[in-house]
Length: 571
Image (tube, rainbow, N blue to C red; front, side, top):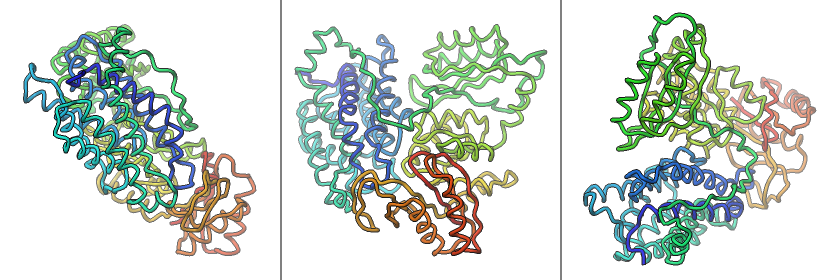
């Protein structure tokens, strides 16, 4: 019987948990409280755990970190954080981080010779996981994944056992029971006849932990020659995700820290080399010396993690220095997310001049919306991004002060995680909690670089908050809404996220939604037509507004966004 949690068990858990989430992905996606087409918790969890698995697979087997359960958990948690998508992905990454912190703290107290994690240690880790999950949410709500995590921790602590498997089973059983009670705690779940989707995902993960600790699983792994934790390659993820077209590439690096650069070189500025580096601080000291001799505009900043941390490396080198710059990273640790970009003297001067300025990163989908935001000078990230993708966009902006506009309540936690990561790298990042692209357009319209950054962020937040937002979409499921029952296929008009209009004709539902929104006051109306909206819709709505709301000013754009036939902003 396995008496202690080891690194091999952590790897089995991560691989098994990912396989289990893939098996239950569609089921969890369907646990959607609302009929709007955004029920993707299962997909988000699969993508989050995929990143965690990739991080574990990249861990060199011979390193001390790979041999310790705390090190493997920390790497798993770090991968989950960078790959986290949606609120559910961020919360699960924090659950893993809480467990990793607890295990690492216990090892530090006991010393290298006493790093074993038995049942009591697992109970402490689950308690730390629950606390980290609650801390990650600004306004915790019971009847969610937080409640499920707390129930698992309570059951593990009450058992007061050092039997590792018994503690894991007690936690998984209590989590499943707490999940079954979530409809009693959240009326929205009861109305939809479902349990909490994030909580269901956590139950799947805890059941996978029990499986990873079970004797049959261990003996099977050992007989296959995998006791050191190298699981067989996972099959390609069966991810049903029409918005996951963005690249996973993570081009690290920030602009020259002091904005001065080095004007002594002659001719071409050569190339910009950037990468992320997993390495210890002592190795990075040597890397700085090597890269300093190869080029200029050198910046190396770390995440602040103890031991092996993640560093953003940025340097400008001549063509002959590209290979040596990357080889220096290989000698120092494990480089990844490598990018090499040509630079000429004009580009370099422009980069340095922009380094001290501001930027905005906006989440959006659709060619028209992307063009609108880019015309406002914003960097656009595809919808439902990971922490890694948002962080890469922040760094690509080459600005020291950056505002993030998530444009979706389910992306706000990811934006906050990216902001924390960027701030650890020396940047100043603020999140304006926009819930719709029309709110982001309102926020960007009031930007003023002459104001202090903090004042500018406040002005943007006020403009976004003063913009009511509406959406027209097709219901994905039967549901009971505040506007009455709807059936899958009905057209829904939502105001600030709540269903107000139900119908079967797009022009009629859109006009009624416009009436509902302007009935509460407003002078400026922004309409954004979706990818499948008919061309005649704009003319129909302009004619309706001209008759009923003659004093309202209409602006209409072709956004091309998926899922939502129409977006409406009223200021």
